[in-house]
Length: 285
Image (cartoon, rainbow, N blue to C red; front, top):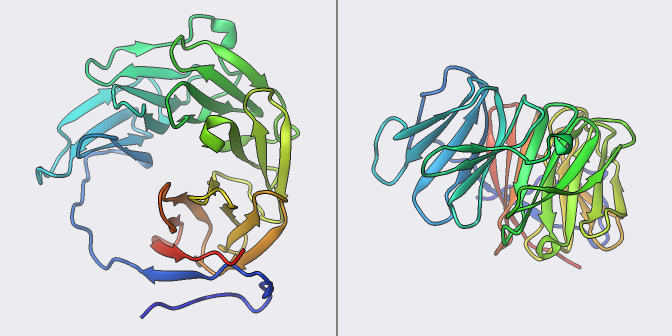
C-alpha cells in the first residue's frame, strides 16, 4: 500500500498530497559499460534507445527493447560528460561537458559541432544543457551564467550573467512552451526566467542547495518542484506566486535528480541514498 509521508511541519492548508507509490525492487535491465560515474541519461523521443553520459568521457547508447546486455553504440568525447539531451526529433544530441563549449552531436554520425563564434562559449565547464520542447532553442549553464541558443544556427542569442548572484548554476528546465526557464543554483534558490528578455520573473526560496540539484515544473505548470539537500525533502512552490506550498519527506540523503511527467501527475526522484522513488501527485489548488 502507498505510504504518505508528510512532515509534521508541512503546511496543512492547500497542501499538496504527494503519495509515494512504490520503490521497484528489481531492475529489468542493468548495464555496466561505463568505467566511471554516470552523470545523466536521456530517452530517445522516437526509438527504444537510452543514452548515458559519464565522467569516462563517453556517451553510450542502449537498445533496451532488444535485451542486449551492452551498449550498441558509443560516442567518445574529449571531456567528462555532465549532461546529455536528445533533440525532440532525435536527430541531434546536446552534451554538457568539462569543456567550456557546448558539444552538439549529429546522432547518426557523431560529428560534433561547436558554436560558430568562440566568444559565445561559457567561461567555465558546462554543467547542464536542455532543449526547449520544440527544439527551436536550447539553454546551457556554466559557472554563474546561463546562455540561450538558437537551435538551428547554434548561435547564442542571450546570456544571463551572474544568474544566481555569482553562485554556480547547476541545472536547467524549460517551461511555458519554451517561453520560461527554471534554473537551480548553489545560492539555494530556484529562479524562473523569461527566455525572450532574460528578465528574472520569480525566485523560489527555502530549499538548501549547494551541489547539483534538479528543478522542474509539474505537468500543468501549476507547481515548481525541487529538493532540500540538507533534509532530503521534496519542496513544492506555487509557480504563479513563488509561495512555498509544502515539503515532503522523500530521501534520507540529498536528492540529486527530480523529473515530472509532461502529461500526467507522476514524478520520480533519485537520491544519494541509492533509491529511486516514483510519486503520484494530486494537487489541491
